[in-house]
Length: 538
Ligand code: G4P
Image (cartoon, rainbow, N blue to C red; front, side):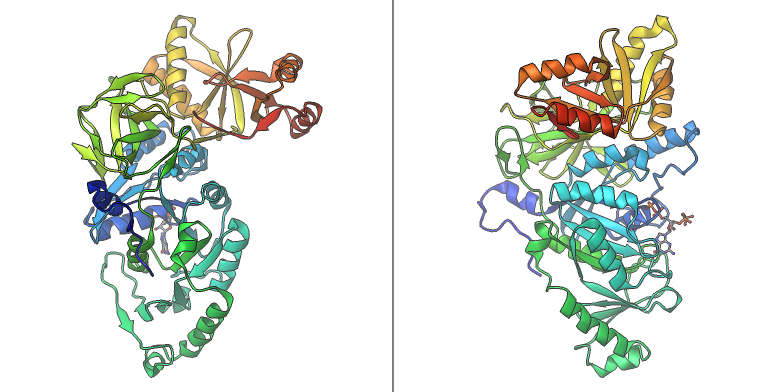
């Protein structure tokens, strides 16, 4: 496997060394597949934590929707573990956490805009699950390179060929196994590394870091029959089949998002994780260029640029400040230097920019492309905002998807109308939900992907803004953004459908369709209109 370097590109640039050293990625999975466990094992290898059990799951347990303590706990944990930086093999790894609960899927989609690659965890017994399919769609949209870790081989599951077929079919990506399991469940012997040609023997142990690796010269080595007498011939047959079915692994196909290398292991037993990590640091992409409305921004450009992909409210209700998570895209970020907030046309400097190392936060003086910086914010930032050294462009590609549940926000305390207005604006800036406004009457419609957000909003409005509200269910099917170069037709549509038209926070026209049928008919009746199912926050 060829290492992934920026060779050939202006070697003298001092930024190159820092850029080549960075890998910024996210782990995605369906809840319970083992994301938290794998994260913890990666941090153990990186020396960022010393014992297993130190990383808490950020899961909200199913059925805990009314448990506000659980929601608060979740918020607390996800601030601490939003970004986990650690060093391994001379590489600075930035691991961005993604919420497991599907009600927070939008948050995950946005986080995926800030990574350069992804590790996808799949439970060998459960195979490809719904949440995995959705998350992979987002990765496929952006051609994000993906490495797959098939987890829980210590349990009975589907055969490796079957699971690989299922991945290819459901996730629309070609796969290439790099390791291969020797049996599974109670019979699980270990994995054979198809490239390094060695066997890693499985010994269940949750704390162990060292692997038990035995090298063999080839699969014909008689040592194999001594080591695994019952499985040697079977492994030979399977290896032959693998070479017949799958093309040889080419790093270029992985980097272009066409082929996903696959590893097998057991995160809980720290088994197969080292192979994964070693390969990851070797082949995973360094910070990539990012698209803006003006031009592509290369990471080694001298001037700093970055964008906000996540905003997190502080937990302390006495301080209304928030943390805006900025992905550095180019140049060097420096503490106390003035940067332009392009959307607002104002400059800001930051005296306490924060970096995150596992469960620790610390103030930093500088950060490089691929790094995530936490900026304390008093309400100036929205998701998608761009910071530069003066040039005016906006980073693209931060998607908003149609919500699935719609409710009208009703103020239940007229004395607190202003607080409610401010609260709902700020919470929707954080991306907790989407806000649509209908005229006349300034009707507020909140759209989310899950019920849980309504409870979070109601709770936080009261706790943080002293505003009380209730939600009335609205029977909308989808929010679709509508644009057209045919102004007359657009006006006509808005007049005819005024009951279903609202504007989003950025003054874009949104059609709130009551059913799939209604949406289809509108598309037929107004052929010059464009109906957008996702929208970029710019
Ligand atoms: P998630 O973040 O993707 O939601 O999953 P998480 O790591 O929390 O793992 C979900 C469950 O699967 C946990 O069990 C975890 O211990 C278990 N698990 C993870 N990797 C493996 C593995 O390789 N083999 C086996 N057998 N189990 C694994 P739990 O009972 O829900 O939680 P806990 O009480 O063990 O913490």
